[in-house]
Image (cartoon, rainbow, N blue to C red; front, side):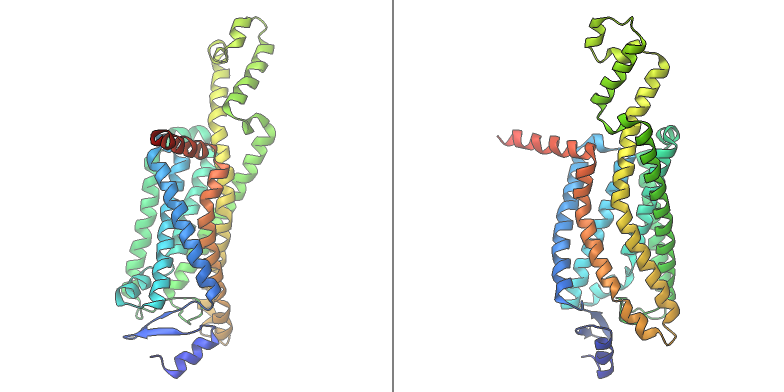
Length: 359
């Protein structure tokens, strides 16, 4: 049972109650609305992200750096949803292993999301701004190794922080926990989120500029081929009508410079499309993570001052931010399906094949 001082402090910070077993405490959510919302978002998020992994596992044409980045983000999203499940179950049914697991991984969702989306921003910026270099030097293996390296660095930092930290308290916004580990987490999340936001804005402006300069990049490959052929047919009147009926004659009868321009336009169209939908998907997560990093840093510096009570009261806002992040990660696969033509066609072809085999 909790002491009277602990229960009164929990009420001051807005907690309904807390459960203590063998000197470890896992706070519960301050309202049933957040609990119900998290349950719904976790169920929808796990289902949608597992469907994304299934489609990626079955479709080889999605094995490209612009989609490999999304696989890594999907894996991180599944981990975050599972962590939320363990957190909610441990608040209701506390156990020592679950508490140790949560203490070890406290704050990692913010770090994984910030660093992961920052890697995506860097990869997309290189793909949009330096297309030829990206095409020759960036592969799926490099992207996978980059995400693995970031994961290893985060885990090593967690091990060092947990070994050197004197008290192993579970951090939940509002319970008054402030340590150098959370300060380091806040600075890392805030800095990486700021870098990601700047890169995403630069990518979006560059994509919009290219779309205005080359309106045909918004069209499909077939429409692009027809428009290019009409332009070439006007410049070369010696082409025969038989050649004009076949769209393949565009590549065979045109010059080497035109062929390279056509191939570059067709390939860069998908990269520009990826830059746009990653901007739509990444920006809300990066903004929310940047806010989290700012709150964590502010919480550390104000925890020893007269503003400690006010700061810990404001930290409950992070509970709502994290719930919003669960909603965003649950809806991101739908946004990805709506904006990515490659993923949309892969889903249609995959499920169409399944329907034919069943009938």
